[in-house]
Image 1 (cartoon, rainbow, N blue to C red):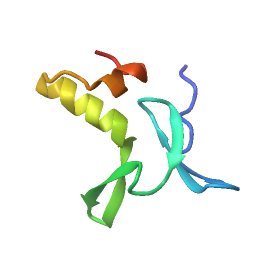
Image 2: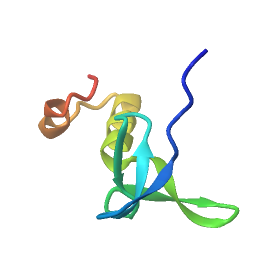
Image 3: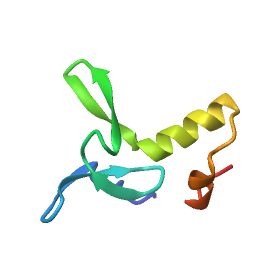
Image 4: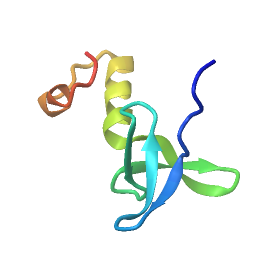
Length: 77
């Protein structure tokens, strides 16, 4: 049996609300500086992947090379 997924958004005492990115498995501040907005039935919400992981997945899907800064972060090629 697989372990349960961590909660998507939690409250950090210093940063405020932080959101979990399932791709890089890190918590980032839950704002538009780190996550894209997605339109949904309940209005605008934050995307599940952080901006860096979203961009890496998009570039892989489109067949474009990753920029050096993403390769240095250990993103898959």
